[in-house]
Length: 191
Image (cartoon, rainbow, N blue to C red; front, side, top):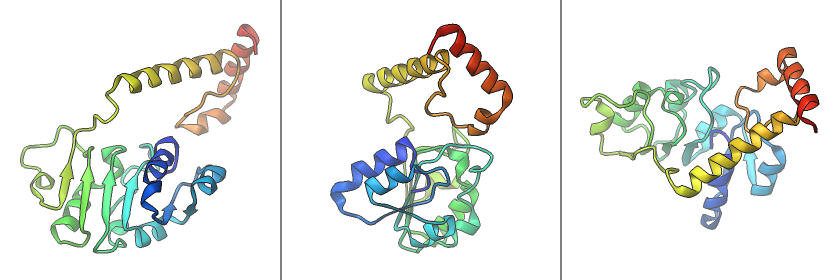
């Protein structure tokens, strides 16, 4: 997996009955979670070389935009599959389309595309080795309740001067302005 945050880790938990060997690349990985799930952390290029099924589970950022690109796709086995349920721009879709058209990887499962909605004549829509689905897996009452609870927890964490969980842009946490505001909220609303 490319990324083993909350979603990536849950993917591994769901796949446990299949008794697979798990490898992942995530520079921010919680090593305890990786160990608990039996995930071998590897370098980025090694992940692309070794994966039979590579699932993209990382957030979109400047560092991850097009991280799945022609160079990395060229490392994949011809029997490998790419799954992207994260964000479309993480994958260079033109490069992916080329390797799929040329049969250099076995296939792809996508519920996100680089451009949404896609043009009707987008070549990826016409490929037999691509499975497309709507990015709607979490549109359930339980998901909305969970999102609401997570949002409330984050607000309460900040109000009490604690770092909220799930911060994607972690660089902001080191800035003086953020530290000052967090301390201010903590002193005003209690810890």
